[in-house]
Length: 144
Length: 144
Length: 144
Length: 144
Image (cartoon, rainbow over all chains, first blue to last red; front, side, top):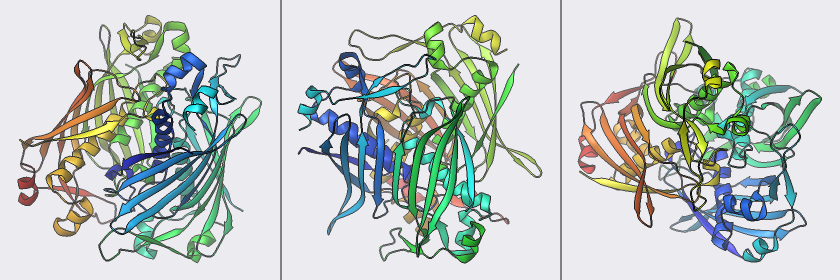
């Protein structure tokens, strides 16, 4: 099981009037950690996989997150990411968001997602659409 | 059970290079729908509840979301919000995100959250902190 | 001179720890107002103009903004937009952001931008690129 | 003249359907670079300056930006920041956003802002307000 860490510095503008991280920003960082996982494993950027495999990205199907402690600006967060399970046309990606302190590490957030590898599907009206495909073996082998 | 609807117009900048809504934006809108629920029920803005009750907002403890269909810019989304359950020091807020079409309505997203009513707690180092309090009866009665 | 108004409700999460709108959010709303201007004038969404004219959008070349008063959550802002000048391969789009009050209207922000109509240009390495084209007459006539 | 550099990795979700950075994100990064400048110079976080000096942050009064080249996800951007001028109750902060390439560096964006040091001012209705104060000498000397 491969694990990749992505670090984030929390900024003033990431925090709300209560002075704590406004939670949608955690999902912004988790999405970056997801892509960073693939990039670190050697998967090319989605613009290139679109040309070679038709894959435009890994959109989310389902997410669950537990917010355990608050964070604020000035904090540095480490997001530990791995793929927990490969399924037929989807996979489970899991995240732990930690803040290192002088006494150890606080767990800020735990998240588990179901994502798919998506290719474009244009419907007859030209509206954008996507459909899931099985994880390409060349991508999957890079991530294990 | 009171239900409140909040509408959102999806913008170009809400979409990613795949041309579809970048998912953290859904959480941005869901958070707005959460606050809009309270406002529509007659709860004052958090700056005022902080003065009267100490309540600084309703931070998230836990969220689960299912992404059922994609959305793109130009779409108008209606977010239907209600409080599904009151617990001791938390409550469950539920959302359905719909896009009305000529044939009916597409369900884009379903989400269920656990939130708390939070008051400030400053630790000895002056770092920001929060703790949960029971839902104030005057707020709860407005929302039922 | 055609003027179009786009309205925005300021949300809790749009505000920073000082309790006021975090300024990058104004640019988010201004960009939405820019697209809303074209849509209201009858210009199709960019996904369609890409197919018919190659136009992928109207990226920014230059912006100037004056922040005159603060705004906070609960405020409703009206963004008044018009095209001030058509140039060879660019145009000037101007915005006034107003908050209506019981005594009249506060001017929150004034902004003036230079934008272009952009078509794709892929360089030899496949990196994304854009170049400016003259405003298509069919778009320009819709906006005057 | 002190100069501080802040680095940003552009993410997939920072880009729009045209595949390029959606411009409000540049202002998000510039605001982070502004705060990072003060932090690197030794200025405490705003939550602390609020307690000691009343200063809640450095809100924007005026900004001008030129967008010279596009950027896309995978790019690493270096934001070079300095204070160009101290005025009575405001100061000018300037930014150059560069992308290092094998042949040198591309200038992506240049930006110049007027900011103030702000303290809270609550009006009689309890609405949030701010006013500018002269740059505190202890802060100014750290930044020169």
